[in-house]
Image (cartoon, rainbow, N blue to C red; front, side, top):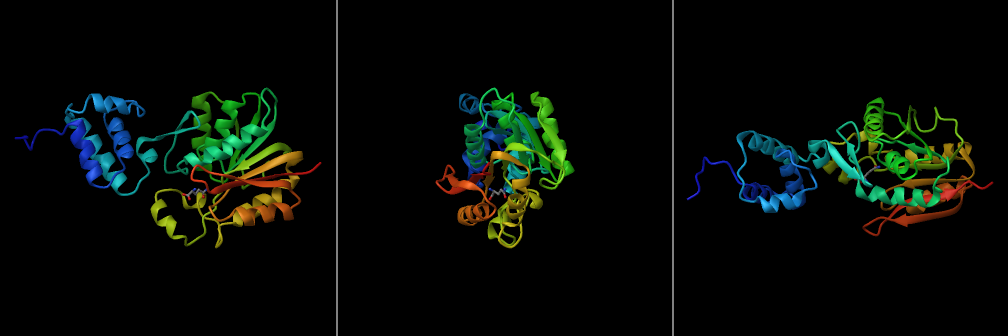
Amino acid sequence: MTDPHASPSVAECLQQAVRQGLARVDAQILLLFALARPLHDRAWLLAHDTDQLTEAQQHNWDQALQRRLQGEPVAYITGRKDFFGLTLNVDARVLDPRPDTEILVEWALELLPVGQPTRVLDLGTGSGAVALALQHQRPAAKVTAVDASADALVVASANAQRLGLPMKCVLSHWMDAVPGPFELIVSNPPYVAEGDPHLAALTHEPLQALTSGVDGLDDIRQIIAQAPSRLAPGGWLLLEHGWDQAAPVQALLRKAGFIQVQSRRDLAGVERCTGGVMPD
Ligand code: GLN
């Protein structure tokens, strides 16, 4: 007979969470967090499945589980998210970085020569995920990260400092406060349409980082309108966007004078990023 007052084991905690509807991987990460273990060390849980939690660990676990059951992203509960090989500190002041955004980073890296002081601008940097990944991969690049949210910039600059990356942070509504020129401009802007039912699952994240007018394209239109005056000749603009926005974003870019307009697919096969070149 199991003693009902005994603290649960590692295996019992995971079972409890999965029964309540958590994804197994989320349960594992949150349990490692509650146990103050490295979050990538899921093998440790297997090797210690009969270990019983201390009272303090059980308290941490209950709190983490309740927060997740209320829909809070795992990254806000643990305060951390891995993105392109970097561990970022994240919280509710910034969007939780998505793995799909790594596509934007990969495309940008193809365009950034190694060892060159290329001027790069990241618009709506949030936690700094995209800008810091680029600065980390291209140490010689001159990376500027902007956000219209002072709160987000605090998170981004703290991440830059902690990771020892020299990226510059500027408070700016899109390109208003950055004269350029830049050889590359990247952005994962807000692009969800106001009223999109999908927003119901994202209530813990900053709405200003998610929605952009009735069709979700208001901010993308502003960025595309400003970019030609900030890009060096031959410079690229790369934008992440919604699953059904590749065609309108391509049309907006062509109308603004961009050439070589093209889209890239995300991990799910959805056209998720679109970009083009400002001709000489
Ligand atoms: N990709 C996010 C989502 O749909 C939205 C991110 C954004 O608007 N930039 O969950």
